[in-house]
Length: 116
Image (cartoon, rainbow, N blue to C red; front, side, top):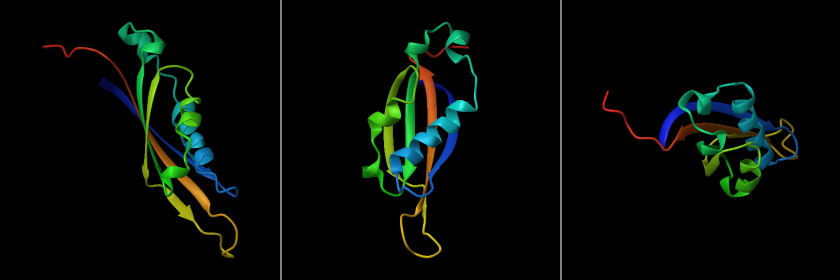
């Protein structure tokens, strides 16, 4: 894959303690703030997009990668979840922490490098 674009996002789960929901919101944050016609610019179909999704949360095993893939309307998505993000404890010390997830979307296509 030749990476052409990288976008970043942040999402949270305020009360439910849901790492997947926080990650989904981070993906939506990255996607919904852009309208880039990358496929058309290079003469590809949108389904040809190759997307690497890097997700950072405090409990990586609690993220459903398939649920994150379902957020994308097209493209071949490869999900990588690692330790990152932030869990913010409740001031009173009870209940689920506020979960913050960070994502980076790297978008590209299978293309050859030019000599120019």
